[in-house]
Amino acid sequence: NLRDARAAAAMFEAVNTLPMPVIARIHGAALGGGAGLAAVADVAVADESATFGFTEVKLGLIPAIIAPYVLAKIGQSAARELFLTGRRFSASHAREIGLVHEVVAAGQLDRTVERYLDEIRANGREAMAAAKALLRAIAQDPDIQPSRVDLLSPVERKTLLTDWNDTAVAHSRGVALH
Image (cartoon, rainbow, N blue to C red; front, side, top):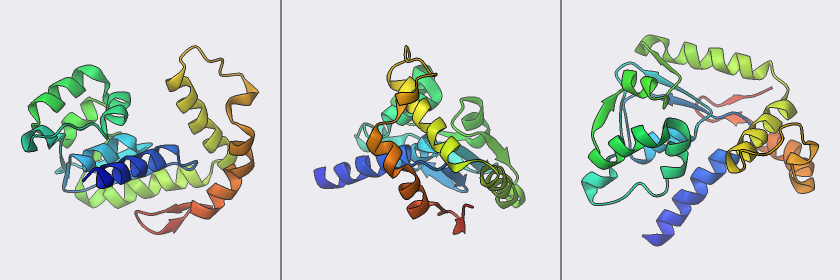
């Protein structure tokens, strides 16, 4: 199972470092890793009937793989309560703690995701990728000067557009970002 855990950790890190925005469209139950995906997403939109939970402790496990992303998204206080109880919670609570950005009626979920996609499509790809890199850099070193031009390594700069063009597909609906 160590191999599966390493693969899951690599997947979460890959999602976290994608140069394009990641939108989570949440309908139904997002438990354990599903709630972790909401945490690692740049934008998370949930159906009002969605439920969430960091339920690993109910199985005798710890949420080690998703913990860094959850802590970054909801903070230590909320994470402590939810990691230690393993309780399920509503979409409205997920919104209150910052795990999701919008909670909408089921019939509005696709329309709301489309609205975010329209906003993203209107943006500069390089600017969004650089903004994500900047946010990661500041999270790793809060004293970093945001005006620094060298936030991206030469390799990151060189591969940024190639990576973007190779993977710029909104997987949730198969919509290419232009």
